[in-house]
Length: 240
Image (cartoon, rainbow, N blue to C red; front, side, top):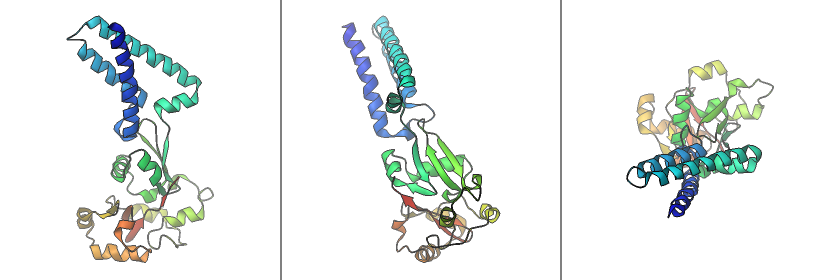
């Protein structure tokens, strides 16, 4: 009977791990996937042990601790095993472009991204050159301002001008850009954010005219747009 309980504990460990990996990194929060599963199972076993044979459940916790130690040791030796249990970093923004394929894979939507940006005092995707979703669910952000003129390709800077984003050759003044960026997205996932339009005192007609200037026919074609420098910044996308 004792062995059945231990086998169930081991089975639950791997079942929860696979379920959490399927749900995506945004459900993990501050903890790594590996640590989060261990905490969940230990808590559950501890509660169950209050009403049943306490020593069996304590044995289960010890076995779980041994599994964690063993896997942690093996993960240090083998990178592939570490990636399997803890996951890998995900590149969400590459050279100023949203990586939609990776966002879908990690169940990481634009609302998640916008919240994390605000927590880091970033007002718009236009400020970001690279954004990495780490294995623990945190984001690492590298802004355009952190790159020198030599290291930032002209084409990359041109894509992040506000009006005529697709064909513009003008490099915006960074000081002006910082002053005129508003932290209220106008379009998110192909939908107009009407409450933000009211805050910014913009009309739907203005937005529609702006997207047509940049070669779009419908709001649904746009994943993210922000009001900056008197016009719209429309984020480009990629699939890596």
